Image 1: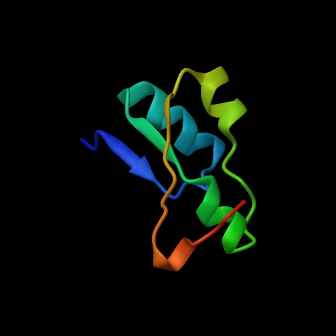
Image 2: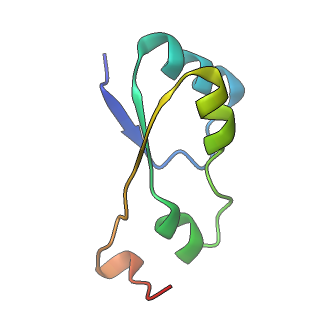
Image 3: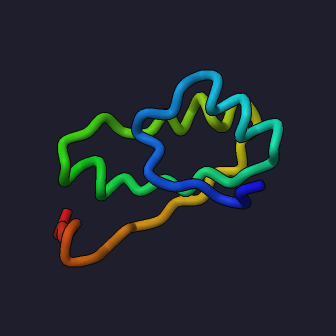
Length: 67
């Protein structure tokens, strides 16, 4: 029943399909992945599967970045 999900660096193929089926928005936070040296969310795969993708900054003291 979620309308949006964030922090999707580890989203599986099954999870991406489920988000598309549920018409749930994927909120991508690339600054968080960059600062924590995590892999970036698979935005292209999400878009290809029909997931609604939103882009957020997650700009806060824990993810402070000038880049």
